[in-house]
Amino acid sequence: MNRRAAVALLALGCAQCTWIAAAAQQVSIDTTSQGEGVVVTAFADMQVDPRTAWSVISDYDHLAEFIPDMQSSRVVRRDGDRLLVDQAGHFGFLFFQQPVTVRLEVVESPRQQHIVARAVSGNLRQMEGRYALEVLATGEVRLSYAGRVEPDFPLPPVVGKAVLRRVMARQFNALVKEIVRRDAAAGALPAPR
Image (cartoon, rainbow, N blue to C red; front, side, top):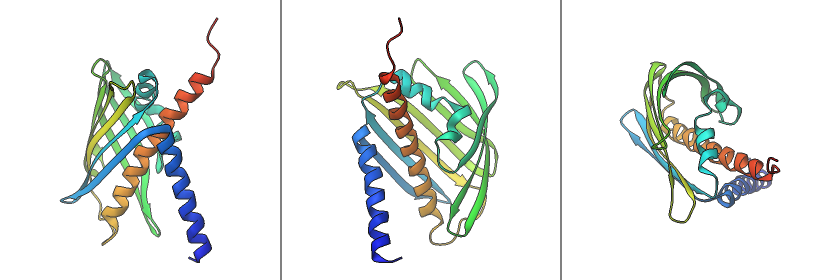
Protein backbone atom coordinates (compact mmCIF):
# COMPACT_ATOMS: atom_id res chain seq x y z
CA MET A 1 0.00 0.00 0.00
CA ASN A 2 1.49 3.35 -0.96
CA ARG A 3 1.69 6.23 1.50
CA ARG A 4 -1.18 8.22 -0.09
CA ALA A 5 -3.54 5.23 0.08
CA ALA A 6 -2.54 4.57 3.71
CA VAL A 7 -3.23 8.21 4.65
CA ALA A 8 -6.61 8.12 2.87
CA LEU A 9 -7.54 4.88 4.64
CA LEU A 10 -6.49 6.32 8.00
CA ALA A 11 -8.48 9.52 7.34
CA LEU A 12 -11.58 7.50 6.43
CA GLY A 13 -11.23 5.41 9.58
CA CYS A 14 -10.75 8.50 11.74
CA ALA A 15 -13.74 10.22 10.13
CA GLN A 16 -15.94 7.22 10.97
CA CYS A 17 -14.63 7.18 14.56
CA THR A 18 -15.31 10.91 14.85
CA TRP A 19 -18.87 10.46 13.56
CA ILE A 20 -19.54 7.69 16.06
CA ALA A 21 -17.91 9.68 18.86
CA ALA A 22 -19.97 12.76 18.00
CA ALA A 23 -23.19 10.75 17.87
CA ALA A 24 -22.46 8.86 21.05
CA GLN A 25 -20.83 10.79 23.84
CA GLN A 26 -18.66 7.83 24.72
CA VAL A 27 -18.07 4.44 23.11
CA SER A 28 -15.84 1.86 24.78
CA ILE A 29 -15.14 -1.61 23.43
CA ASP A 30 -12.82 -4.09 25.11
CA THR A 31 -12.09 -7.44 23.50
CA THR A 32 -9.85 -10.14 24.93
CA SER A 33 -8.96 -13.68 24.02
CA GLN A 34 -10.17 -16.39 26.36
CA GLY A 35 -9.33 -19.97 25.53
CA GLU A 36 -10.51 -20.64 21.98
CA GLY A 37 -12.93 -17.70 22.08
CA VAL A 38 -13.19 -13.97 22.45
CA VAL A 39 -14.84 -12.01 25.26
CA VAL A 40 -16.32 -8.60 24.51
CA THR A 41 -17.47 -5.91 26.91
CA ALA A 42 -18.71 -2.68 25.40
CA PHE A 43 -20.82 0.33 26.18
CA ALA A 44 -21.98 3.50 24.47
CA ASP A 45 -23.52 6.58 26.08
CA MET A 46 -25.94 8.33 23.72
CA GLN A 47 -28.35 11.25 23.75
CA VAL A 48 -31.26 9.19 22.39
CA ASP A 49 -34.75 8.12 23.36
CA PRO A 50 -34.47 4.78 25.23
CA ARG A 51 -37.48 3.50 23.26
CA THR A 52 -35.52 4.00 20.05
CA ALA A 53 -32.51 2.15 21.46
CA TRP A 54 -34.76 -0.76 22.52
CA SER A 55 -36.45 -0.89 19.13
CA VAL A 56 -33.07 -1.19 17.40
CA ILE A 57 -31.52 -3.87 19.63
CA SER A 58 -34.72 -5.94 19.41
CA ASP A 59 -35.22 -5.49 15.63
CA TYR A 60 -34.02 -9.01 14.83
CA ASP A 61 -35.65 -9.19 11.39
CA HIS A 62 -33.73 -6.12 10.17
CA LEU A 63 -30.31 -6.54 11.81
CA ALA A 64 -28.73 -7.68 8.55
CA GLU A 65 -29.58 -4.31 7.00
CA PHE A 66 -27.07 -2.49 9.20
CA ILE A 67 -24.81 -5.03 10.95
CA PRO A 68 -21.59 -5.70 8.97
CA ASP A 69 -20.94 -9.28 7.87
CA MET A 70 -24.52 -10.37 8.68
CA GLN A 71 -26.43 -11.63 5.65
CA SER A 72 -29.73 -12.60 7.28
CA SER A 73 -31.53 -12.47 10.59
CA ARG A 74 -35.09 -13.57 11.21
CA VAL A 75 -37.34 -14.58 14.05
CA VAL A 76 -38.45 -18.19 13.52
CA ARG A 77 -40.51 -18.49 16.70
CA ARG A 78 -41.83 -16.13 19.34
CA ASP A 79 -43.45 -17.18 22.58
CA GLY A 80 -44.00 -14.04 24.64
CA ASP A 81 -40.57 -12.69 25.56
CA ARG A 82 -38.77 -15.85 24.36
CA LEU A 83 -37.66 -16.10 20.75
CA LEU A 84 -35.66 -18.25 18.39
CA VAL A 85 -33.69 -16.19 15.88
CA ASP A 86 -31.77 -17.61 12.92
CA GLN A 87 -28.80 -15.60 11.70
CA ALA A 88 -26.30 -16.15 8.92
CA GLY A 89 -23.27 -14.24 7.81
CA HIS A 90 -19.58 -14.64 7.34
CA PHE A 91 -16.33 -14.13 9.15
CA GLY A 92 -13.48 -13.10 6.95
CA PHE A 93 -10.08 -11.60 6.54
CA LEU A 94 -8.28 -11.24 3.21
CA PHE A 95 -8.50 -14.68 1.59
CA PHE A 96 -10.06 -16.44 4.59
CA GLN A 97 -13.87 -16.49 4.47
CA GLN A 98 -15.95 -18.64 6.80
CA PRO A 99 -19.75 -18.83 6.64
CA VAL A 100 -21.35 -18.48 10.06
CA THR A 101 -24.81 -19.77 10.95
CA VAL A 102 -26.40 -19.64 14.36
CA ARG A 103 -29.77 -20.18 15.97
CA LEU A 104 -30.12 -17.99 19.03
CA GLU A 105 -32.40 -18.48 21.97
CA VAL A 106 -33.30 -14.94 22.99
CA VAL A 107 -34.98 -13.79 26.19
CA GLU A 108 -36.22 -10.20 26.25
CA SER A 109 -36.88 -8.34 29.48
CA PRO A 110 -38.46 -5.06 28.37
CA ARG A 111 -39.15 -3.82 31.91
CA GLN A 112 -35.56 -4.39 32.99
CA GLN A 113 -34.39 -3.22 29.55
CA HIS A 114 -32.12 -6.14 28.76
CA ILE A 115 -31.85 -8.95 26.22
CA VAL A 116 -29.98 -12.22 26.76
CA ALA A 117 -29.09 -14.46 23.82
CA ARG A 118 -27.25 -17.75 23.51
CA ALA A 119 -26.49 -20.04 20.60
CA VAL A 120 -28.42 -23.31 20.59
CA SER A 121 -27.23 -24.56 17.19
CA GLY A 122 -25.04 -23.58 14.26
CA ASN A 123 -21.31 -23.46 13.74
CA LEU A 124 -20.47 -21.46 16.84
CA ARG A 125 -19.38 -23.71 19.69
CA GLN A 126 -20.44 -21.02 22.12
CA MET A 127 -22.09 -17.64 21.75
CA GLU A 128 -23.76 -15.86 24.59
CA GLY A 129 -24.37 -12.21 25.17
CA ARG A 130 -26.36 -9.68 27.12
CA TYR A 131 -27.47 -6.23 25.98
CA ALA A 132 -28.73 -3.80 28.61
CA LEU A 133 -30.08 -0.25 28.46
CA GLU A 134 -29.84 2.19 31.34
CA VAL A 135 -30.84 5.85 31.59
CA LEU A 136 -28.00 7.69 33.30
CA ALA A 137 -28.31 10.65 35.68
CA THR A 138 -27.13 12.87 32.78
CA GLY A 139 -30.18 11.80 30.75
CA GLU A 140 -28.02 9.83 28.35
CA VAL A 141 -28.87 6.25 27.50
CA ARG A 142 -26.12 3.68 28.09
CA LEU A 143 -26.13 0.59 25.89
CA SER A 144 -23.97 -2.12 27.45
CA TYR A 145 -22.95 -5.45 25.97
CA ALA A 146 -21.11 -8.37 27.51
CA GLY A 147 -20.61 -11.58 25.59
CA ARG A 148 -18.40 -14.46 24.55
CA VAL A 149 -17.98 -16.12 21.15
CA GLU A 150 -16.14 -19.32 20.40
CA PRO A 151 -16.30 -20.58 16.81
CA ASP A 152 -16.67 -24.26 15.97
CA PHE A 153 -14.28 -23.86 13.03
CA PRO A 154 -10.53 -23.27 12.96
CA LEU A 155 -9.39 -19.66 12.94
CA PRO A 156 -6.40 -18.64 10.83
CA PRO A 157 -3.22 -18.81 12.88
CA VAL A 158 -1.80 -15.58 14.32
CA VAL A 159 -4.56 -13.21 13.10
CA GLY A 160 -7.73 -15.25 13.68
CA LYS A 161 -8.72 -13.96 17.11
CA ALA A 162 -7.66 -10.42 16.25
CA VAL A 163 -9.99 -10.48 13.26
CA LEU A 164 -12.82 -11.93 15.37
CA ARG A 165 -12.32 -9.11 17.90
CA ARG A 166 -12.37 -6.53 15.08
CA VAL A 167 -15.58 -7.97 13.62
CA MET A 168 -17.34 -7.87 16.99
CA ALA A 169 -16.23 -4.27 17.60
CA ARG A 170 -17.47 -3.24 14.13
CA GLN A 171 -20.82 -4.84 14.82
CA PHE A 172 -21.26 -3.02 18.14
CA ASN A 173 -20.32 0.29 16.50
CA ALA A 174 -22.85 -0.37 13.73
CA LEU A 175 -25.56 -0.98 16.32
CA VAL A 176 -24.73 2.33 18.02
CA LYS A 177 -24.71 4.13 14.68
CA GLU A 178 -28.15 2.73 13.80
CA ILE A 179 -29.61 3.76 17.17
CA VAL A 180 -28.35 7.31 16.68
CA ARG A 181 -29.54 7.39 13.06
CA ARG A 182 -33.06 6.23 13.92
CA ASP A 183 -33.26 8.61 16.86
CA ALA A 184 -32.22 11.55 14.64
CA ALA A 185 -34.75 10.49 11.99
CA ALA A 186 -37.52 10.28 14.60
CA GLY A 187 -36.59 13.75 15.90
CA ALA A 188 -36.75 15.16 12.37
CA LEU A 189 -40.31 13.94 11.84
CA PRO A 190 -43.09 16.45 12.43
CA ALA A 191 -45.18 15.90 15.55
CA PRO A 192 -48.45 14.01 14.89
CA ARG A 193 -51.59 16.17 14.74
